[in-house]
Length: 411
Image 1 (cartoon, one colour):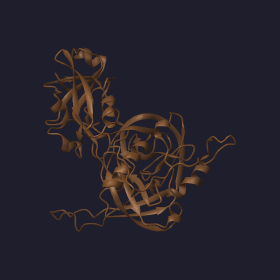
Image 2 (cartoon, helix red, strand yellow):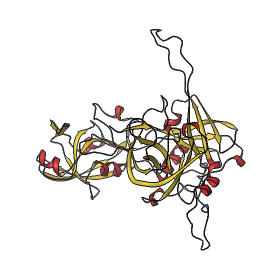
Image 3 (tube, one colour):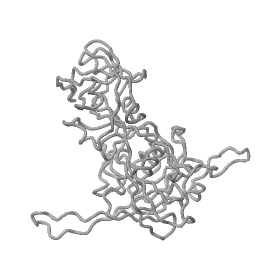
Image 4 (cartoon, helix red, strand yellow):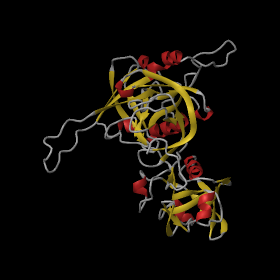
């Protein structure tokens, strides 16, 4: 079985599963999306892209070499050390005195001249002290956490460093990336600071699992070598702009990099940064269902009236979907070894857009914010109806949002 592992091998940065793609019989708990909050006058400004690293004679951006990108951007990459508290002693005294805490290493990058640094949540979660060094400097700065968002695995730190030591990296537009585009990763794999690797965008629109069990959408897949310690570092395009935050890897047999890495898109990070700067936390939309993708084989096996869509398995009691009248399944069955709840509503469209899979549902919820309404078209009892769902505020974790287990999460 393919195993995914966190890029940070510490207890508090525990096992994220990379490359979670929703399968036909996969259980998924829906909730995501973030508020498109407007920044205040006192909010620090994320570094704008003024010019590319290099331009050709005609004035349009040309592809830069890895060396050019590294020389231009490496000074804005951070080496992060996060100290974890010592484990609690055994209440039975079997294992002697408690040992000291551990220090985990990760990466990050400067985003503005106020000293804000973006990294992964799993790099700093639970840390008692966070230290940051920038670029090739040997100076270490104490960092405090402005806010974290486990739902997107992002964290915003702040250091008090002289302005001449702060080199914000320009943020690009991850929606413009295409499969095959060249990319560069700069970070600190295995604590080897200032390491650069290169590759291409090998896939787009992936979903991975966040630390709190919900899914992160529109993730960039790359074959640029990223390893434990690269977490939180920038994925950079050919003109020196950050297009993603390196977060997870897919592994085979528990080893290191095998050419499949995942980066949280920078467009997702922009929204998160704004909310963390303003309030220290991020709100996400919440639908409150688990569901299964319908394909022709499943439709035939259980005699469904449609051969595509999403079969609602369970509805969270009192959640947005439940309040709108969407029903989950009531009859348990096992199809090809997968447990299903049959008899629930079938989602076929949301806001007039055809729904063919759970990925579609997750992405549409991810694009919304709490308080938004979605018109959900369902097949129910042999007839079709459209109900309006007012999305709620998502719970802090999948476990906390359900009254019964809903299986592996995905939304």
